[in-house]
Length: 262
Image 1 (cartoon, rainbow, N blue to C red):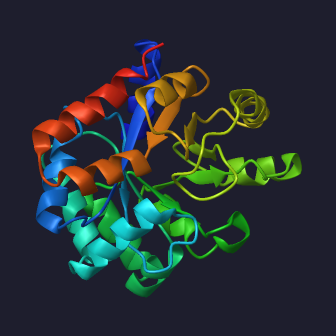
Image 2: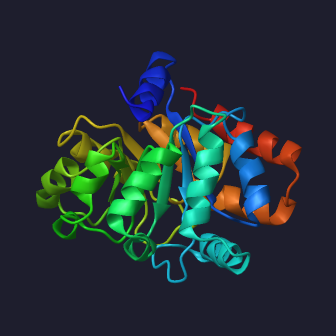
């Protein structure tokens, strides 16, 4: 059983959804980001999504896009992000999922990336702009090296496309709750519930909800509907405002994590 599978099994046994915080790799610096990563398991993170900074993040709102730019300006590269993962894995067993766009991975080299990610202890990756129809060069390499390819499903994903998306996914599915960029307003709960029911009918993978989840109350509402809740922009914005104050960061993340209890 993979670390991701174990995390969801533990959450189910504890009758709660998984708490999945997102932070941008290298923001505001590699040193501070490493400290923030180290703090997240004790703050209640069940799975951690670590962003790969990219200069043209078409799905990201201003908060996460600016975090990516700060990381790039601080010198962060994909090699550095893998270094953060390697250092984290030496201390923690919490699953780590990288999230970003295909371009940096293409430049790094697909085979080299898959091998280095495995060696660094990465458990999965979300490639926002990689549809299953274009994944033939990447997907087999990730599978070979034990890296789960987590798929995004949008409100605009038509029912006929769900089998293709779910058949080419591993680990869990990431349901984008809103039609738009990260950090936007939350979608109506009834619509999310309807879409999640359709997705669950097409797969046995855990289904997690992200985009538009900002507060402990938001987390609690989504935890009642899903297997996991992703919080990104609110955490990234907190880091921007609070800097490297680990005490405040841990307290903020813990309050979000507590919302996953049903």
